[in-house]
Image (cartoon, rainbow, N blue to C red; front, side, top):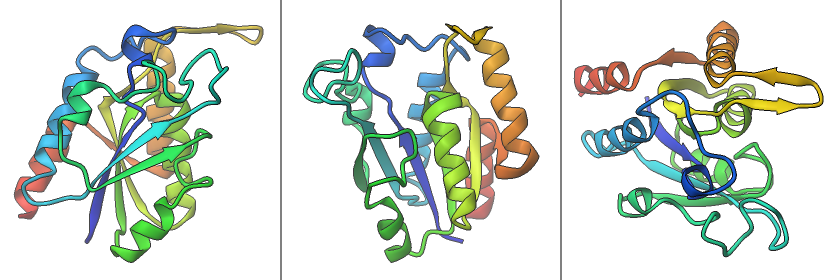
Length: 184
């Protein structure tokens, strides 16, 4: 089994920008724990960064909001992937890199649960990967638009339940780390 950890869009926009992640508490710390745990035994860490055009209201390439959070930049990673759509496979070299390194299992951490994490997990499943979705190392915020509104906790829970139905094995960061220790 060859596994990689995908750390999706842990960028300043979600901390100091227009889209502050609010749920679950501790998700950022758990993302860091997962990255640190990937070092022993070595599990490749792939950091994914979303980029929008320079005139976009969020994630505009080159802005502070677009930059990776300093704690993510400070941690080792094996690959940095820039994407422009919610799915980390779309228009990127991620699939080719995973194939070259014979990766068969992907673990998902990052932001936002219902958007880029969910889309990437579904893409990975469709491509034949086994997927683990870290329930407390992914996160979101409350959403309201013309279709209605949903709280951060309801939205997060709905995605986790859906992921577990078909696409991923949903587990906590502590469970994932414990599984790494048992496997090594």
